[in-house]
Length: 76
Image 1 (cartoon, one colour):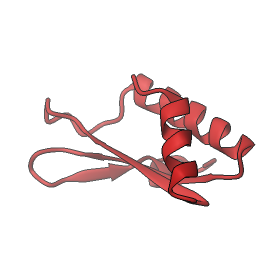
Image 2 (cartoon, one colour):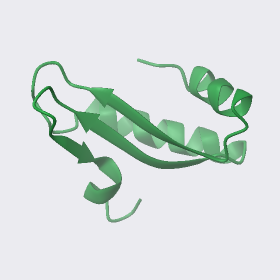
Image 3 (cartoon, helix red, strand yellow):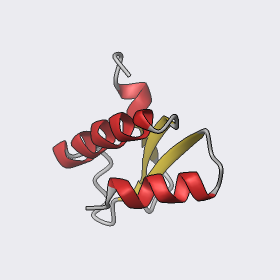
């Protein structure tokens, strides 16, 4: 797990107003895990408190395929 504080610190140091999270699944399984979805919600809510928008969370696998959690969630 990555710390929300670490993500927020990086965003603030870069003077970012928005970020995109991206990580890989070495297993080749492209579907987001429940933990991926939970992390996305926690980061989105945490960043909102400091005025930084989470634009998307992208999962990539070795074949180059990717999935956007934003596109998967109608209630983003």
